Image 1 (cartoon, rainbow, N blue to C red):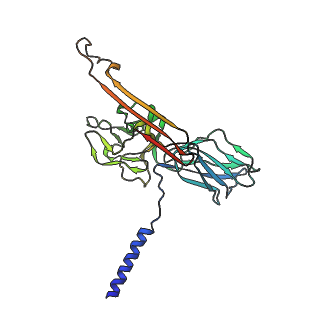
Image 2 (cartoon, rainbow, N blue to C red; image 1 turned 120 degrees about the vertical axis):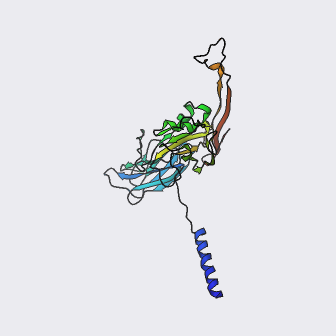
Image 3 (spheres, helix red, strand yellow; image 1 turned 135 degrees about the horizontal axis):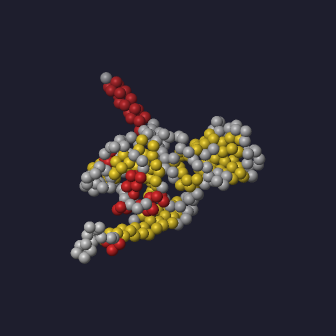
Length: 309
């Protein structure tokens, strides 16, 4: 009887160890992107074993791989940014493409056609080809850094730019929360907030202030965000409405930063159309929002920093 019990304990312990130590890492692509494509020769035949090097133009970080037997390559995950690709193979001229921007969750297809020649010779493409999204059927839109910083936003709440995406509107009329949005006709509480790939949803939605997310970085700290309203992949789940997936800026080899103040004051406002300026004064309004953001390098091409306030 004791031997049977001991055998049961041994089997149970083996199962627990297998569950703990036998887990492999699953590479999700929540806040990053992917570059993939096919390398061929001038006749259209695929070229296996070609070395593909993808370099981040902001940080100098380079990632290399080789093409598969069918001539294809896949590099993932890559942090959003500006990239340049270089392809080389013995017996062919080295090829370089024009720099392109990789957006959050984008699967950019970049193909190459190598020309016969020496590796010391380089064929450089100077014009960027528009990258089509053919690897995913998700419906959504990327709001880039320039749009986030330049669009007028009441209260400097960048999540309200979600209403510029088709299928998204403000919350129902009469709602106390005026800084929420509704997608696909669902309630605002059914949206899913992600920040740098991490769940950013409040467990207790504040319907008085409309705050549904936990951490809301300032506008100048947001690099870009993608709003998906339909056909998003199973890695997200949870959302019945939209998925707002944001990523923050990071440091680069060059020092960059901003210092800002946003002012709202009744001195700049006109009086109400129906108010008599002689007897009815404008309502007092004093709002000043200060902040700063900066990023740079600690060790070139290796370690970087970014801070915002």
